[in-house]
Image (cartoon, rainbow, N blue to C red; front, top):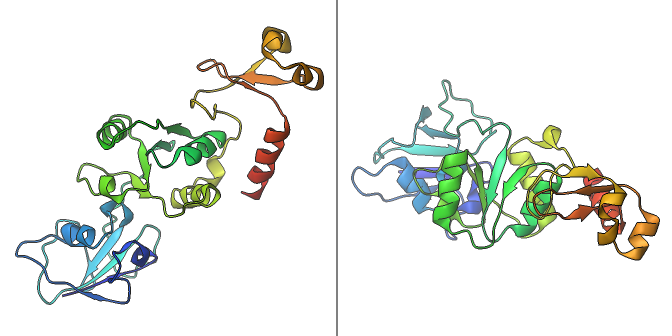
Length: 240
């Protein structure tokens, strides 16, 4: 039996399996989902599986003469009919991020996306919140995405936050959904306009002199204004 991973899925395979079709030795009654994840690819990264040219689901049981092709979301697949294995993502897109992705959480909040993050979330908490609130899991740990209960999830490839944002926007087709400066980057709350007089006692002297427009997060009380940090982030936004 052979498996071929297409459309960039090769990069998720364990080392030693990334060069061309894989000859796979399997146990009796093993499903295609088990085989895919044993080779390193979480099921959340797979949208279509062809076995001998026929589209199948994750419960298909392997046969010795099978020729299998595995495709990611949005790949061009010629077979008809096709079973799309990736469920439709929640709308609007809401996320929960693991401990490794704090910077990404802040950037997604800046873009207006509801993004839960705490640096002490464990895997069980992330899965519970994902299931209860229909949140997409963003993670650098493929193990959590292999859990059979998880439907919505993405394995973030890059270590660089700018590239990570690009990955998420492209994976979930979110570029038209961006609403900058809607959420607090610190706590995910919705920020509101506030008068200068209400917060004047909290401002540093130079800030109070040079700026008049302010916003505040009612949840964590962080204050925002269009200083140099704003200009840097606004410049980054323009590149999106």
